[in-house]
Image 1: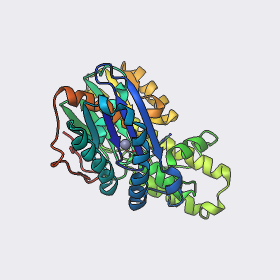
Image 2 (image 1 turned 135 degrees about the horizontal axis):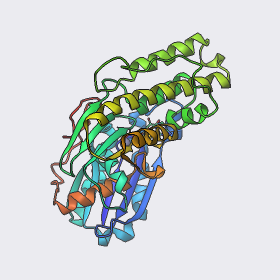
Image 3 (image 1 turned 120 degrees about the horizontal axis):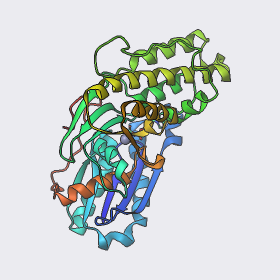
Image 4 (image 1 turned 90 degrees about the horizontal axis):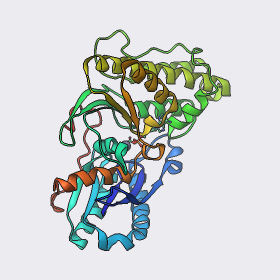
Length: 337
Ligand code: KG4
Ligand code: ZN
């Protein structure tokens, strides 16, 4: 079995995965959403301190599996430096104490493997990754060969949901809150720009749209003056603009890439409205759509463990003395080729 740890942002999570069967034997996640909600986003120092409490609590429950462990896996990049450190410190000491190899996992590759929890992996694959930190389309040739085809030039999809929710005084995380309000809203009420609509660029950009939402909130007299219906309508209009942007750029990739399987992963892939749009697009282009079960869309150690099985078979281990955090700059492209 492999014990995997995830602490790249505001979720403390540990999983135990059986190497041969890929079965997820144990999985637990303690989220910090309530603690960060008051700030409208994740506060790194607070997140780090909460990991320091939550991770040992979860680890305690995994003790019965210690004697069966063949490796320890941990997210070491990208993410918040101070929170990655908590997971790494624990993984390092476990690997040394139990004398088993250590596997360093790239968080975004983990998200891709959330598609294959308890399942065989499929490649080649085109993946749209929409999380709190990243927005990318990736061509996954194989476990070893992944190439970024498009990336965001500024904010990510999840981040823009969070920031717009904050502007409307909704709380954190913004994605599920905006999605829920949008269900009651008129998506055509607010005229918002679809980013890069007339640009030939195959890239994403969310910051202009975010600004446009800010101006609409201001035009309403600030979020305190907005009615429930105003918030529903603005949420729906915002979500529609994001959808049109994602679909428009994905179409350009679909026109060039022959790979049949297409997947959406990352926290924002839980969004039913976006999923539905992609079902339509995949039908139109004759592609099959893969998504992870809802519980594994946002950060979790199950996906880190699933990725680690592949790394284990390829003996991709790291010396515990060498492992370090790589809190890569969020929007750099090509950062996991
Ligand atoms: O993948 P994730 O858990 O963390 C990162 O790796 O960043 O993604 C978290 C992001 C948050 O920004 C959150 O608002 C967004 O995923 N999210 C959603 C939904 N559920 C979570 N965005 C849109 N619609 C949702 N239903
Ligand atoms: Zn993530």
